[in-house]
Image (cartoon, rainbow, N blue to C red; front, side):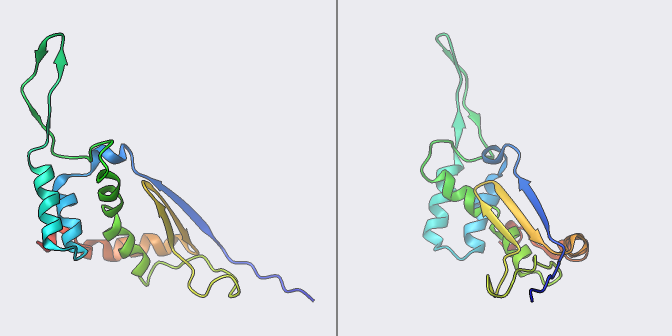
Amino acid sequence: MAQHNTADSYFISLDFQKAFDTIEYKWLNSVPQYQNFPLTFCKYIAQIQHHASSQIQVNQFITYPIPINRGVRQGDVLSLTLFILAPNPLLTYIQENKYISPTKYPPKLTKYPPKLTAYADDITLSISKPLSLKEAFKKQLHSFKRPQDYN
């Protein structure tokens, strides 16, 4: 005789708007430090971004350099890696938060159900109680520090 068990499951899809253009350099510089990357690596990242600028050419005229203070450079081999690192503090906060309840899976499928999956700028939360997410952010988001707060 088969048993029929039901459990509420909620899947919340998050997508960064203009993902590669919106991340501030201060954040990109502080996340690797927060995640204990070697100091030399962190200095290289900061140096690469420190004097980033663009110029626009119209006919034969070129504008003065325009400073760029946010975003990762499209086509740069390092950009995707930096972008993937950027949301990690938030993802870690959600995954480790005891108030956010993951969707229940049969024990044969997994012993530790994930609360989220992430791929580039797409994040999907998989939770059993929508209020658990709301309450966790209401109660504890004020204690979530931005990586630059650790410097």
